[in-house]
Structure formats: structure tokens, C-alpha cells
Length: 76
Image (cartoon, rainbow, N blue to C red):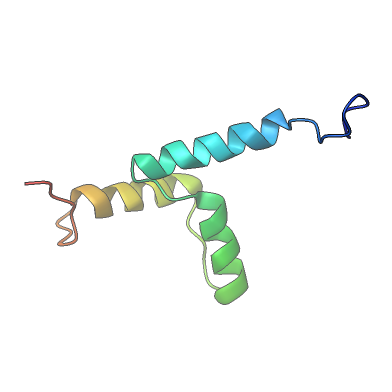
């Protein structure tokens, strides 16, 4: 719904919060689970999709090298 005084669109706080959350997650190395899920359903139909918790743990392990991952991020 637009503002009755200036005809500009009203600020959608829930959408803004979702975008801020996604940006914060990317800053700490956590890709968006919802994008992952949409990708899997569109490109790999019928294959299993990780749960949100499994996705988080897998991405964390990939970033920090837990479980012997060779792709760990190292700053030094």
C-alpha cells in the first residue's frame, strides 16, 4: 500500500528484516538456506535436501575445516 500523502511505497519492515538477516549471515559465512532449498528443488528434483540444521553444520564445517575438510578458510 502506498503512502496517501506522497504516493511513495510504504516501507515493508518484514522484508527489510529478512534482507538484513541474509546480509548478516553472508558476512559471517552462512549462505541463505532458502536459496539453497529453491536451487535443489529446481535443479535437482527428487534428490534429498538437507535440513536447515544440517545445512548450517555443513557450511560451518566447510568454512572452518571441521571434520578434516581441506577447503577450510585460513586467514594466516
